Length: 102
Image 1 (cartoon, rainbow, N blue to C red):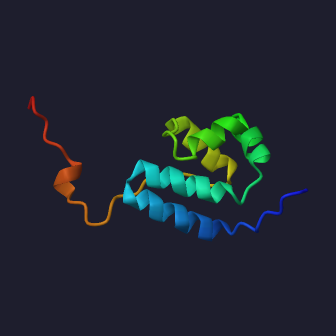
Image 2: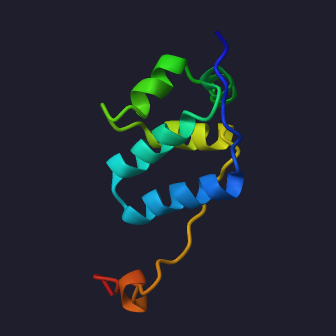
Image 3: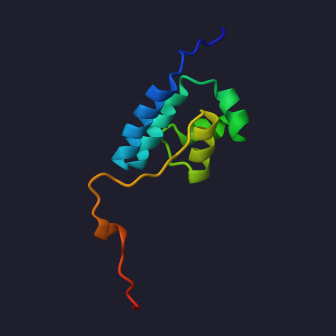
């Protein structure tokens, strides 16, 4: 029996994952990636990411937290990129630390 995957809408996928990233909670982020992976062919993702399928299932199955390199490789294989932006409402003084020696 062949599994049928629902079409992935990149902007919707990015919005869902960005909500998880906004939480700054590693388990929530990995859970959201794991949930999103259900809409992809894991064999194709593993081939593109250079990882074994079992490693991907284990990394995003809420059993353990994956290495950062695994997260980046899987997001890239999903056609996504990680982008850093200033946090809304962050104070400038929190971003600029005074030099303790100077």
